Amino acid sequence: MDKVLANMATNERIHIRVGGQDLTTHPYYSRRMHRLLATIERKSSNQRPYVTYDEVNGKQHWWWDTLHENDGGVLNDESMRNYYAKCHETHQKYYANATEIVAKADPMEKMAVDNFNNSKCILTDTLTINVVHPSSHSGHCGIRVMQLKRDYRLSAVTVQCDGHIFANKSCVISTDGNIEMLLLKPHALNRDSILYGVTELVVDTIPFDVSKQDEPIYVCWRLDPYDCSNTLLYPLQVKLPFNNGPMRHIYSKPLLIVYGTPRDRVLRLTIKDLAVYIGNMHVSAHHSNTRVMSDLEYKAARYHMNSNVANVIFVGGPPMNKAMLQLCHYNHNHTRNPTQHCYSPVHFETNAQDVIDGKEGIDSHFSIGAYSYTSNDDAVIYTLPVATAGDEKGNYKKFKDFNENSIGMGICIHASSAAGYLHISRLAWSVVPPMVRSPFANYFPDFIVANSNIWSRGFDGVESAGYWNNQWTYDPYLTYNKKA
Image (cartoon, rainbow, N blue to C red; front, side, top):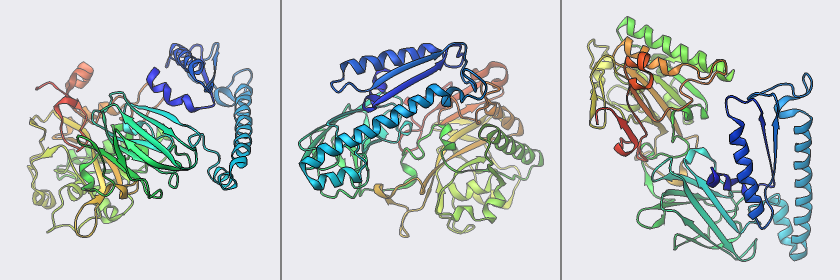
């Protein structure tokens, strides 16, 4: 916790508030956070951040009334409104003071300060960013970790800059060896960048060209870092923060739920019921509607031709879901080339023609890595990448052309029988009732294989669980497997 809290050291003011009777997140954790931040404050040369702590006696995890009815509660009572007012006052003083200082040096730089709203990052010469997962943050001061060699391992990026704060500045970026890819945004792309005015940039002893301040710089690592901004890569072979997972990442953008329509009536109704249940649970948790449709509706409405990629929950894998078959098992003879494609890290022994023709007795068993799951009791839920195709000559794009509109994430829920779908539905139950959470929002990695023991033994009914690597493939080092 002490390492991650260092990310907050550039904040001017931090206020921690917790209920004294919080049984969901015990006040101990807030007290410890306050103690560690106070230590950072004492050690900091610029006396940042200013940390205050408020533990409200008798209150639990959330409350609507602090002192009297409808007074604003945990986030908007008189105490919090005073805090917001102090933040606004501090910002106004800081902006006026810095503008006056820079104006005395150079009128052109005063213009720059006005334009960039007096960014604290521009005035910072040292920065440390700590991350445990690329999708847990959106970057800081123009630096964003896009990939780690091993996710969920604490990693650090340190930036040290020398020279004038607005021009002729040299910066050195150092990493701890677990960084796989960094995104650097010069000032022209990021109004809050420590790289404002940088003319010399070194990353782990390797110099980089920063002459084009209007283009992002992607830094990748093999043995040494190199500029991979123009590297051509198949979109479905790279994990990025837009679709990195785990499963809860499915709710990060507009969502569709697409259920399969296999020939077997019982199986077809079971799949549909599960899709509707997930949609209703989403409404209960977020008070927002999610479109639930069959694979036939998905194809008829040509969602697969949309250039803006939505996240998708496929209920039924390719042996049972024609929409997923079309995106992940494209067949030139039967479907028009879709704009969107997906890749399934879980392998199915499925003949696309048999699914299209609606034949009975289609093999719907699956395998992950070297392990096959052939029991009708087995069921799997897993994440997968969804992306728009590359250029017209091939499905390749440059790193700098990837964005949140062209890349999404899917979840596939698949079983070989109606009973299997019932078993996996146990994982969609809400967490900590009555505080409803979305299905699959808590504690779930990139994939889980479960069977009927999930009912009587809980997580002992999980046969395999883990994370895909950065190429969306099985990695035994990131996996728990009972068969291993």
